[in-house]
Image 1 (cartoon, rainbow, N blue to C red):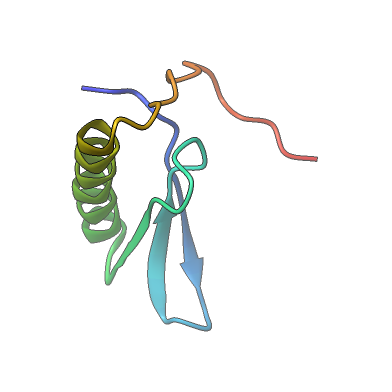
Image 2: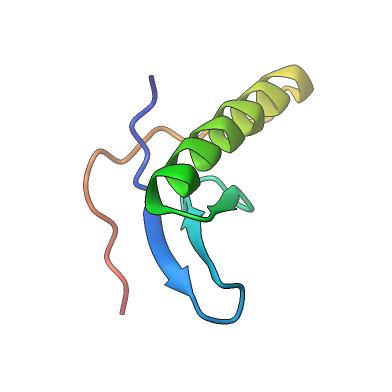
Length: 70
């Protein structure tokens, strides 16, 4: 299993938990609960990686540390 950082937060606008994997551009999901969002983003990550492999795209190596935002 790849160990990419997952960021989960509540969106008032969407009335849902949103989950993003910043190291995989465009890889995100949502859910009605924190657990649903986490499960859904893990599925999205698997799909993202499968598509990248099929298309011969490069797959980022997980940084293995927390990302820093300014």
